[in-house]
Image (cartoon, rainbow, N blue to C red; front, top):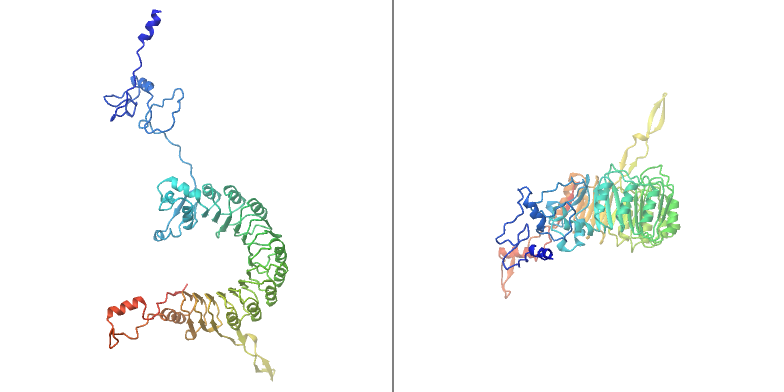
Length: 591
């Protein structure tokens, strides 16, 4: 009993906790009050050992600025070394990732970042509005003044990437694209310009990384090849139920076209070649663009394609077909499809399209706003049918590379289409050589006289030139590039802002008259120097400041006129009270 009684008395009682007083503070290493205290924990330079190790084991100090919950250390591991004393742990070398940065033009930095591009791999990709749209989705305090590459702080960059809704990227390969897409979970619009070949792996990467994708645009550079097949494209469109816009370039490897989607509203495919089957079953499709290369061996059945559109795409409003296989039968099939809602129709490079196809278009389309028959063989009669059928709706008419129309048809079109705002007659009004009638001459054959006709290659060829007068109140853009048959031109269009006279080689300077006060751009590439000088004189000197007619002013009672002081003249000229027109801001483009 005595031993048991003396046991507790021999053990020293634990020291009471020292209350913290105002003004004192604790040791940053061991946690004890600092006043009059010598810390037993050795410094960073001292080697741990002896009593110092025992003190460290007993005290278990806390790390400075450590706000995480305490976690029990395993056996044999000491968590008593302060942060300042801990030896730096060597980090493994970072894994190489795709480099993505935003490059900003210094001259345009103040103008909404100009045309910066996101660069990935070897290429450069998206315009500056990508950065503005990313920042618009985030709070203003979350993003810095400069783009993410120059911002201080990874948090702001991460928030910008996560909130991005549109990305425009130029890359080479799938890995750089995947590195960017994984950072943008909210991405809905993607524009890719590829420097390398594209195949099904790219479509699988996009489908996996962008579950909410609504718009996809893939274009190719000159060296890149699109290897996507028809099966792969069909599978991708069927899986992306939210996809509404699809644009692909270089679709020469498709083989066939079988697209079925209820959400797709815009479909652009270029580079198509020899499609064995073309089926487009999109009930909500609004715009369709199919471009075929200029190859005579193309075996695509355009007649069957046009006939099926009436059953599968009844809401189609805009159609663009580019193929040298276009003919009257193709337009007749379009008429049987009964697409009465068409507002824009473009059938280009169809040299077999004649006035009969124009009559079919007039019967099948009620309210066309844009009609493009460039490269066709229509005449002034077909142009007259167009003017009589769409006088109150047609605003854009493009008839480039139509060699059978004349200046008379163009003048009739500008007269009978009051709402016309754009007209293109490039390379249509070309100088046609007129052959002289063959003359006979005398020939001496075997001692006799015989009349012989002149050889065909010896006939003189004299091209015919015409004059063109265009007067319109609403026309804004007029293109007459390559019209070598025009030697006299008069344009009286108050609203005209763009005039294209490239390669008008036979236009005489003294027979040119431009009455267009709002003209801003004139293109004169390939014209003669005298014509360029005459255009400069008309568009640059016509609207110079007029001199004041009367430099006098009456007194208040109207009794006498006195000379106006010079400073008042300058003030009146600045205020525009003299009635003089402002100087023209027109630009003459030589290239």
